[in-house]
Image (cartoon, rainbow, N blue to C red; front, side, top):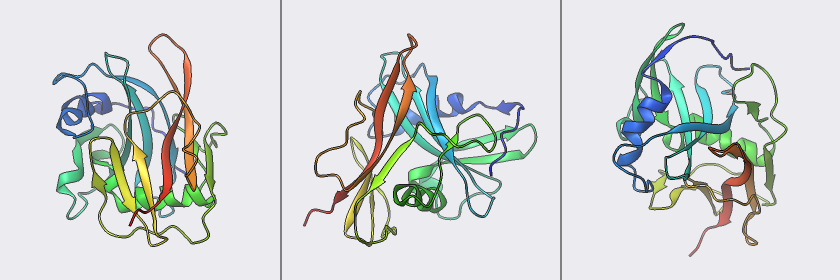
Length: 210
């Protein structure tokens, strides 16, 4: 189980994301985001080496962005384009933060979550499952990654050997009902600036188009 350290982080995660988000094709805000933490959950790395967090942040215009993040104690070789930034952790020292959709450890954990082989954890509490996170998968084949993830203006696509695409939603809507043709989904809640709780689909499994 991951351990949540109560310590300082410099720069903060929100400060890192404020610089990184405007460089993404799916970001729709200003060049100077005003971000607030709005929710999310964690998954465990079976090897216990990589921190995995699925973070939701809101911008000043109310848009909610879903940003999977990984935290590593050393750079991930060949993943320079996915680096969000580095930060100094009061306990663990220098940490390299990556866009989790482009980190193989996070991708494997997400696919395991769809299949029910991984248990979502509370975002800010040690060793505590998060019952609010819903998941499903009705496909017949195991989900295994195939090829590099692809970003576009709406999200990130993770191709799998099962002939399916996992679409990681980057801008969240106000419904946790997946598309009728979805083979699986992950959904959970986040909190708006005025304190309202909203449920959204974070990711879906879709049949790969020809």
